Length: 71
Image 1 (cartoon, rainbow, N blue to C red):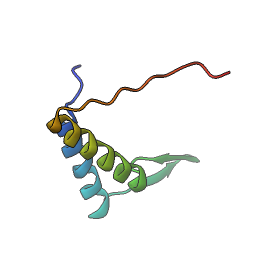
Image 2 (cartoon, rainbow, N blue to C red):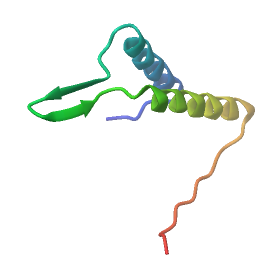
Image 3 (tube, one colour):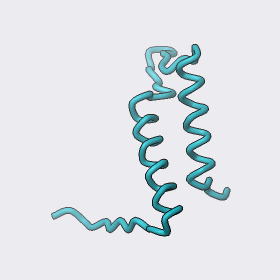
Image 4 (tube, rainbow, N blue to C red):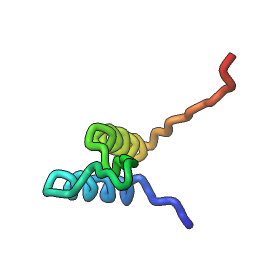
């Protein structure tokens, strides 16, 4: 499966926020197990991050992230 572009992911994230804020269930429990389907604070963080990446790409900038082993 191909990954979504930042623009497509931003649209999907906004749709998830819309679904949550217009009556969608964000959390439910079945047989003693709790499931969080949508987390509004994290969705808003994702919107902010994606908007910044889209703006940077439009300016021709790139963000480089380097991961390293702890310790």
